[in-house]
View (tube, chains in turn purple, red):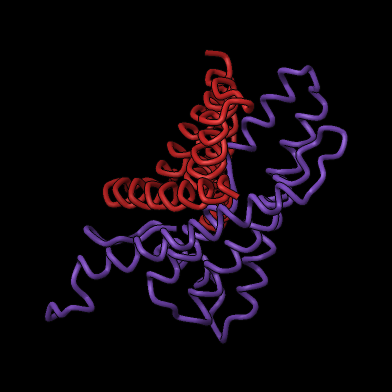
Length: 163
Length: 120
């Protein structure tokens, strides 16, 4: 392919990093807003749980639907997926909150938090990708998951491609 | 108001660094195990644990450090949603052992990282 401005490596990188940067600002502010307006109940980290649940659902839906129904440019996929939703959800706060509960001796609470976060998040992500999969138009059985794997892990050398 | 600027700026940097690291690792790593997200999440858990115990909320500089670096930067750097999405992807590929190992090691190493960070 002829190297033009639009498909040059640097142009692609520039637009992708720009989208991730803008998305990161939006996602981080959104999380901070929800952390502030959601009251903690009996020391249980409700806010982070709600954030991680909604983000897991949103990301699985977005990544699946953009493969099948809406072909979006890579910068938009990176900007919303890695930028907005990636910055919105957080693993570090989840780990530190769990550890703080454990250090306070609230073992049951920590166990409940881990279980709800991981099992709930996983279930919501499965649900979202099913939902998005059903919204796709006429695809053969089995093709969905195979192509998703190619999309997710099978990037070519030198290509910026992140989920 | 000023801490929102810190969160926004930190979020911007954190998201970009994760994007960079993921791209770099994924360009070489060919196995099913999502190594990039795994490494990002456990290092982020350690860093956040460290900052939360080291920085005191009553000190202005530390307050900045907590909101800008802790909430903004590390919060945006680490990700829960990609962890879950990758797990679903592994399930779709019937890579059940990898799925199990990914969930358990992320949890175990993440908690260990946070604990080390909070303890030192």
